Image (cartoon, rainbow, N blue to C red; front, side, top):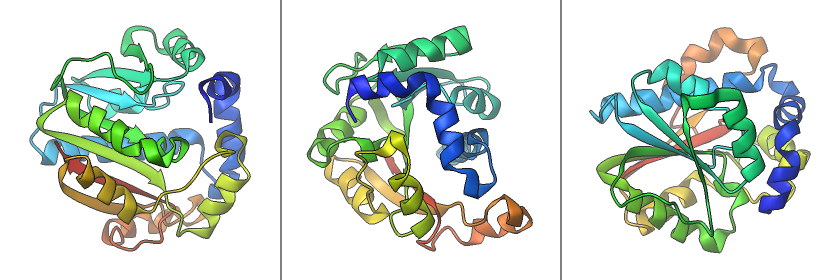
Length: 231
């Protein structure tokens, strides 16, 4: 999807997303929250600063801002995106709760080793495959040595996920990436200590079973997965 297409969908992003995930029985905020809950847990386990500066790469209309504040209340958040319209809508809604950067040609206007960590939520399937290595290298450049990268993606091994992506206007040109491939690409860009975990096994109707997910993160059938790596 081009920058202009992201701009065109920005105002209707939440509505389109909500319609597309109806089968899950959840609202978009549920998915944003568990991602930031996972990120905060990873930050704590890595002994990274709870008041550090973190990057939301491909932040869109700012769905992660409130969950980030909820789970990492003392930290600073920088949102970066290719869509000027999305950033403007995010800033209008969230004000000074985050800082905003417009991406130009995949480059981040940030100094080397300036971020304690970064997260990328369901963005790489919109990026051309031959550009993945350069994007990952740019993320590694701005993350401090020992800092954390978390990449969330849709799992192409889950048939309901594949159906949702194929029927979503936001994902019209999306190419899903396996967890193994995403992990290898992180390592190829110079990240180390990478791992992968699978998430979202039960819809809202089976929410009572969700505590079991903590023991299923190895099973490559969850609707989404995340790859973590250190710079």
